[in-house]
Length: 82
Image (cartoon, rainbow, N blue to C red; front, side):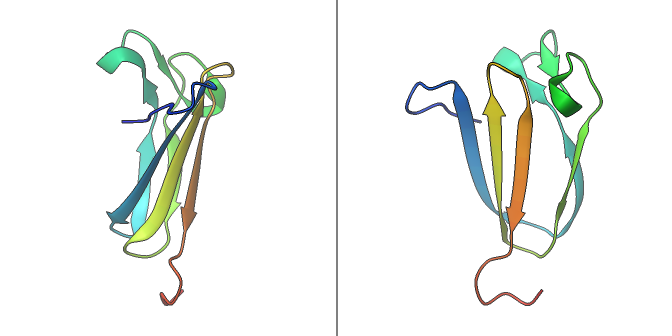
């Protein structure tokens, strides 16, 4: 669940513990596929692919409510083999 804690229209979620691998996602508004945004913020667009490089990487999802673009950044934790 992405949250906009400071009310600036940018929603964020950071996850730890995903297994290494390739994933896809998109944004679904209000827990429904009636309004959803895919790659590039396109309504009903293609899934957004991303890769988790190592187990337990930090993955941050950031959604801009104005552009509807979801950005995904996976970072290798300090000390993890790369």
